[in-house]
Length: 370
Image (cartoon, helix red, strand yellow):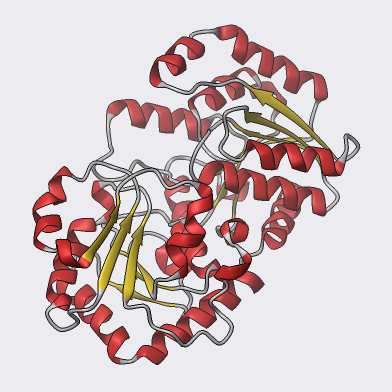
């Protein structure tokens, strides 16, 4: 089987997710072609993958995409770039064209490749998140979904949502988000026998309205009265103007890293926290959950979308979305019974490394495509 993997994004989880998929496909004996951005954060890892495998197993094509909004507009209007990619796909004739995450150029390419009937897309979010909805995003999402012949989703909830968009259920497969141990360093494995409390919890990831940060800040204010030594670390980029009043009131207990978090920083950020809190108001799923699990960190998360599918019993705690009291009481209970933190962290680590492997993800994909 020959699979062409396409992802032209530059930053965040997308390049890592795509790289791990490519590496696992190669390990299963699949010949992989990959088209990635030369500006990808992990382009060195892609180049190393090519040099260590050889052209008989893996071939890498780099595309100069863009580094700014103005460059994106100018290069998006340069139709020769898209046409070059279309010609490349037609030339190598892969058995399957796998798109691992959405990007505006992907849909343009796949539109011109619609006669091939071998386009597979991994759809991470079927609908825009609350606070991020617009007619432009709805149109983009429509083309993102409907320029494929088969679909991969990460949860059963997402599968139902995709069926409601008119997609044939027989052409959809659920492959849970694999662990993100790509970010691990040797010194960060806290799972084996760790029995130290750091009195720090973390909110990690891009900051948006649907992430529910305001709920966490209110809950943390209530908890701080009973746990005055507890610290909350907030690490991620986004508009935080709406939270400045809470930041000021809690400034002695907050550690703020309001910026883009590079790949090599996750190890340090998650190493010395007790658990991660994800107070989402809505979500399809979360890539932070398998990331936290890979570090042996348990998670408190809102019971929305497909998140409950990502947190099996004993690996974390689910709370009602938007419920400040429930979230605060759960955080307090964890510190009143610290064995829960350690036990669930161990369970999460083993679950991530035994069930959420990239090898298992690739096996499910290959079976689906066959």
